[in-house]
Image (cartoon, rainbow, N blue to C red; front, side):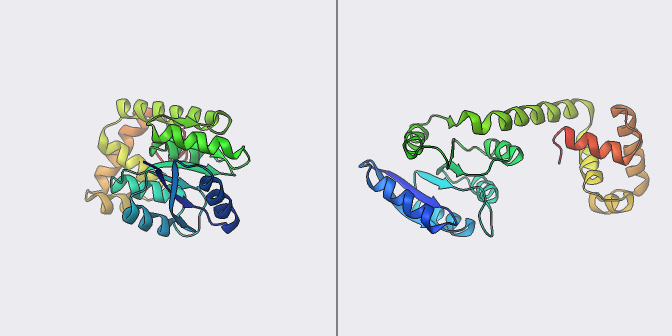
Length: 212
């Protein structure tokens, strides 16, 4: 049975090239092509392809938003990222969201074909040069989150996130349905546990540990 593919890219020439590439392979069948993230989600829901070939940068809903919604809806289609630009944060997030394959657009087309076959077989294909830094960053952030989880309570972590988002004590109190005095008490405890002395250093700590 053919591997069904859904292609998503905002450049028609890229889509044409991909479709022509897969037409030459007897074990592939293209079931749709999309120009933005919203179209991709609709097509995945409707066609349930084996593999979604997805660019990270798309108009409207970008590739990461598509991945988040697919995960939320528990859609079973596996995703291969085909991208030209490399951003460590984006790639780390894509790996966290379950991307099984990643190929750079500058690489030979045959590598994309190999990647899709491998991902369809349940294996992982992450182009080393593209993801080595991203994976390192991802592992650092995961280690940071674990460190924070050991040091702070769930409520304290939530307050750190709100501080990092720029909220003042009164706004945090209102959002979390607690008193402003309770927020101040939590912040005092957080400062002591983490060895920080201001909102600025707390914000920096939150970024370093992957809380935002």
